[in-house]
Image 1 (cartoon, rainbow, N blue to C red):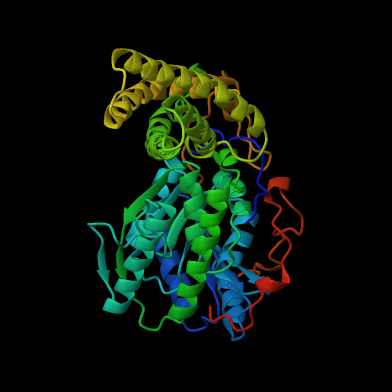
Image 2: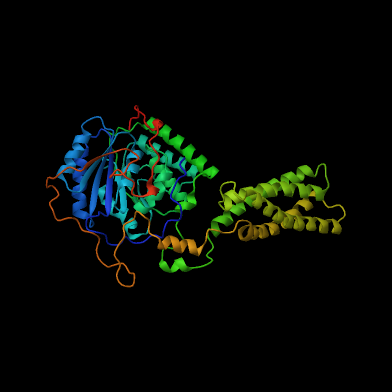
Length: 496
């Protein structure tokens, strides 16, 4: 699992400002492998749809990943005939590798992809990218499982798709409805920091990207789509399902161990400029309360079990102290990781020491309650002792949460300063835009499409890329450095 991503927090989302006329707003990538028959009709149909309905400048990029038939020649011919089309050639297979390479090299602020079979109705394309252009969302996906979607496909694929999404919900707590629909888009500034964290190079690429984005609290917009199954699809279902399950296990392990630096791709509080100056805004209070209550409930059961065990050979005070000590250590460790999201070993000893101080306060409350009970009744029943301890622990729990949040695990990320700095700083690779007097963005439309005829013949724009190179052979930004192609990435028998 990759852990290298650009440092810092993503700036607040903003509506895309006007850019130079030569820069497309949207870059639609079509990853292909041995699609010599379908590629031409697909590109022509997509191009015609965009010319008629899409109001901004666009580009269509054919990402040929190691085709062995005439697909490269078809792609070059399309690039020569249609001005808005270009082709990339990669020498290694894998849809995820193709998307990461082309997206990393693209200069368009909105990046999208769709499968070559065009199973998804193209009328959903503008609703897909509109929330990204407006700054409302970070990613957008087409969903075949939404209530208003209309889908035509066999029972076998329907069962596989729904089962896979149930697995994602149960194992990775995914809340998006459809991970496998080949109809997705992402903002370029988000892709620059998110893609280096995605390891898969095949069909699990989509799922891994969405899970990481969702865990980092990025906003994912879902669009109901009309979708017709392609009966001639070459996807190997069994092989793909096996690889996807392996990917689920790998991502789940990385999330459980905290090896993904999700805080590096978090958004600051509020996208309205007025919100960036708000001080002392509680972050994640509701989530922390839920996590703390769950950990607290489990810790209480663990504590009562230990108390009952220790009470068999020790007095009530000794049994209470031992049970509370053991459960306090476990409670602090669980809250550190699950409730307050502290990862790694840094500060663990200090946190446990502070947790023991909080434990001392809880010990005083519970021990005082037992002492008062023994003073009132010389030999109280065991059930009475447990009832008193539960009440005392409830009071101690409230105080423990407040101390954990304010003292043991305080928010030390800079708060308003970090949010303001992130909002003010432009990404080094992002284009700069002219400003009107007073610092306001100029008013005006998005760049319009060139006036030349789309079918005028010209020089084909075909570029051969390795999976770790940008279009110009250099890196546009250090944050886009992908890992060198590894030998085990290449699978000559991969059917995709």
